[in-house]
Image (cartoon, rainbow, N blue to C red; front, side, top):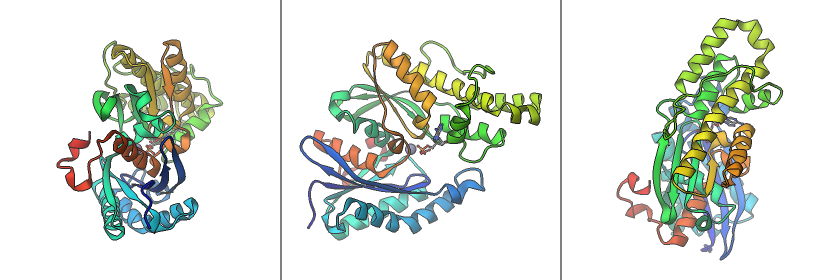
Length: 341
Ligand code: KG4
Ligand code: ZN
């Protein structure tokens, strides 16, 4: 028998197959389980995500991940009250697996199914901890392997894009620079681990588009700067100073991201800043943004690292927040994907 307060969230937009079970009550949202299969090993040897391999892995893993999420939440499949899945943006084949699976399951269980915007999901992972409506309006900085965007979240789930990357995303800047430095894929977590023992002022890497009132980002020049630096200094030097180079590179990325996020919040008169997306697991970015937010009297919101990367809980959370506000469109009521963003 389905329970109206039990939600299943399904995320499959890129290379994580994720399912989460959430229980909603009048005054709280509880994450009963948040399980995922990371496809990193499938893609590692290719140096990036291969879309076709990603779709196939989602197909293989979505049932085991759902079973794991149900077992961890200690509920039977028939108890799910509604399903939310990632509708867009993402890799088309990967999205299709999650969307078809969610819709098939909903039909079978005779429950509702809702399509959610992935980026809104990331914002909602931050809001899970503070209560959605209390925290809006808020300035969200979404930083992942595929996206880098400053989004102004207004009450009633209206979003305004303030600025975004013109080329590489922040996660790509970490991953591509890491490749040049001889690190594995994805390199963000490894760079941040190495950076802990390095000097952030060892080398000044460029901060592109560092102008007042510019809220766009550009990271493609950074990887070229890293390449030139490695070519000029030689492999031995790089090996010897890898921690310092990683710390300097991380500082360049964290500096420009946090600077623009705080500037945007000030320009638009918003008191809350939320950091979300895979790159928000980076300790220096969290530290610097928290520091700058505090200095400017802003409230800083950031989910724990387990909710920073792609996950099913954020998708279910977005659906719950929308439903509470009366702005959740059923899957068959959404005319265009852009309706949701
Ligand atoms: O949000 P996410 O899990 O997937 C996408 O939607 O892209 O983000 C993955 C990105 C990768 O580029 C990875 O290198 C980066 O997040 N990342 C980090 C850290 N952990 C993951 N970047 C910097 N520091 C980290 N600790
Ligand atoms: Zn993401």
